[in-house]
Amino acid sequence: MVGATLTTSLREFGFAKDFDKRYKLVRQLGAGSFGTVHLATDLRTGQEVAVKVITKRIVGGYLESYFVRRVRHEVDIYNHVGHSLNVAYMYGAYETKVRVELVMELCTGGELWTRVQRGKYTEAAAAALIREILCTLAQCHAKGIVLRDVKPENFLFLTPAADAPLKMIDFGLATYCKPGETLTDRAGSPLYVAPEVLKQSYGQLCDVWSAGVIAYQLLAGRFPFEDEDQGLLLSSLDVVGKKRFTNKEVFFAILYSELDFQRPPWDVLSPLARDFVGTLLDRNPATRPTAERALLHPWLRQYDPSYSSLLSTASFDSAGYDSASGGGGGAGNGGGWRPDAAGGAAASGSGRPLSDSLVQRLQRFGTYGRLKQLALRAVAAMLATSESERVSLLGLAFRQLDPEGRGRVPYDAVVRLLTNGDWDLSTTEVTQLLATFDIDSDGCVDYDEWLAALIDWREIQDSPAWEKYVNKVFDMFDVEHSGVLTSDALQRVLCGGLSMSPGGSGPDEEDEAAAAELEECAFDDVVPAALREADSDSDGTISREEFVRFMRTAPGDKLEFYESRRKRRRGGAGNGGGGATDASSSSQL
Ligand SMILES: Nc1ncnc2c1ncn2[C@@H]1O[C@H](COP(=O)(O)OP(=O)(O)OP(=O)(O)O)[C@@H](O)[C@H]1O
Image 1: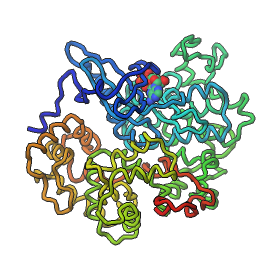
Image 2 (image 1 turned 90 degrees about the vertical axis):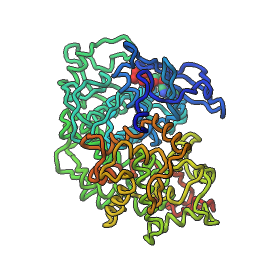
Image 3 (image 1 turned 45 degrees about the horizontal axis):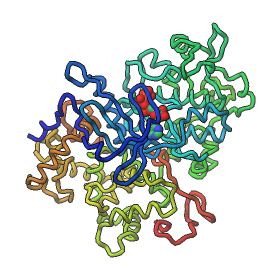
Image 4 (image 1 turned 180 degrees about the horizontal axis):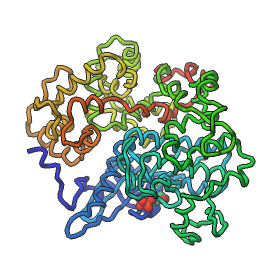
């Protein structure tokens, strides 16, 4: 029985075992409470990577359950949101009898924390960093993931360059929590923990509070709270070790101390900056904005060219910002903002040429789990012959890469497209973006795969035909004809052997090769991951209704929250990108 192979040994996760054949550790880069991180070299390519080495916690012959949960969550979350350019990419997870090795993208630009310590940021520079952090949060929250450890130490710059992208590196405390769900266990880092976490009743909004503490730090160069007894600012708490305050004192300050927006430099910072930070540091999570809403705050938007061109001044003035309403968090400019009103306008990636949002689309598709990717590919196959303008435009772009009309382009051609100079991407990032493009791993990108990754599904799913397509896919995946997707059916669908053509009749012959593939895939944790995402009533199967719900893109999962990395060319026409001046293939996309 295939499903039975899912249970790995009680001392093993089922990760690959050939780390020593693939990588060589060079030197230690850092250490955390959970493991040590090393610089390592890929023995085949010479590429440098970072490797987190975690010693297995084995109690009474078994892996300790908390340890298992933490490692599984970290790996699973990397497999999802790790395809976003805001997150250090994880190449793979390995294990020996005594340790786990997570191989990751190497970040050489140092921690956000060290740059925070170096000095205060201008508002524009702080806004750019906070925007990146909030985008990471919005992407995770849309996937039902709460990070619980948002702090400057967990963000590294990719390179030492001043404008290097920021990457989240640590998902050790992250867990699953959908909007409206409540967590009760205390988790986080003392200085950044939200008040409701201390009260042991919290949800996704706790991450927004922590982002607020970082925003305060970036702008003011210190922590927001004062210790009332000692009259000292908590900024004098030395995180390296010489603590002047106990955790109890810090927690008291987080729960009760007044936020300091009076002392310098707040007297010279803009009222909008105060309003923004005050709104994030609202002790009441019910009135604190979500990450998605916070991204629409006028303070962030004024520094973000993509927003200013997406939102007309008219919609910004009349709908997005109501200067008469009450401000959040008592920040004192008398202003507030109604992010809901502006959300719709900023939300859609439609109308922009593919070249502007190509990298964003690839990232968002990469963050979907394997079940959704396969299902979307099946819908894409049904849409492939569609005459709709959206699909034909994508077809046109595909034909630029496939002029002979073979219906598939070699993976290398897609790599060349992304490295032709139109986008700011490192080699690792190109790998990261394309990792899930070739869904069936045959070294080529088929037209169905191209469509599945690049269609803006949020638009398609509003069409009347959407449910019909999704129901058809459900029927294809229901290989046992039982009316629900069981673990065994999912195993067969997710691990190959299912024809993806719309007329496909289900699993291929279970020949030896297919059986071997299933065995191998069983270690990938893909079935539990699919159930976690789609089986909302946790009964171990996915019903048709659950599948239809699961296939809808979460409202907060917007293309704008992923980095476009599009280079602007001289003579370019702003957001439209229509003024690209070279004749490279992608400029026509
Ligand atoms: N991808 C990376 N590239 C370069 N250095 C890294 C990378 N990941 C981690 N590091 C370094 O290793 C240190 C420890 O990493 P990390 O925070 O992930 O470990 P941890 O044991 O999970 O920590 P924590 O105590 O926060 O749970 C970081 O502070 C950083 O300096």
